[in-house]
Length: 241
Image (cartoon, rainbow, N blue to C red; front, side):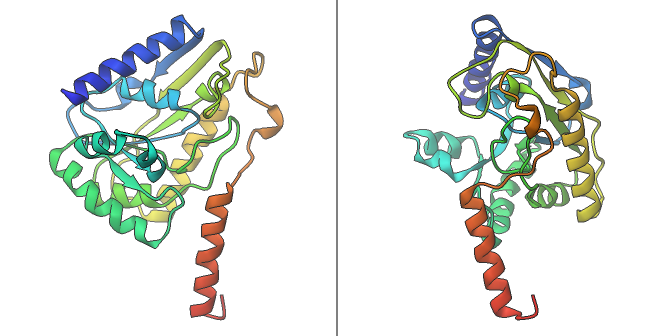
């Protein structure tokens, strides 16, 4: 009942984006997502809008989300009922164990799972460092990963109230088959998502896009602090690092 309600809600939100906000969202490549098997969707994440659009395409899909959502009243209970994988958005050595334990249930159910490999909302045109948690899911599940490109941030940028009319795209790309090693997989996933996301950008009706941001890699304050702490800890253990 909850999953049916969620899908109906996301379909309504997608309709509202198109018919009220004037955001003409088009979904491409839906045929690249098999309906009869478990699959991991690894998507570019630029606003809450892309989550609505992706969820509107499937039924009974789980997802990996940051622990910031636990601060919203009633939502922790809903996430628990949905078997969502809730992790620390800033990463760290404990995230791998958390994700493995929670994802085991989803794997047994044979469901699709959505993950945002950057772990953060990205300013349109930019990217964050891709986290290796997506490879661990891929390795554990032993199923294909479908990269998902996105240009919706031009019309609905991050959490901004202001929306911009015009076209936007969510595109499911060719699946990456199981069995790749970590580094080649991560390089291929990032290349496919970022290259296609840039190609989908509207260079005429810019909306929220600043052309100077295209291709920039950014890091927010919380992620930077946690990374520096990890590097400091590693250097203490091994002074040569």
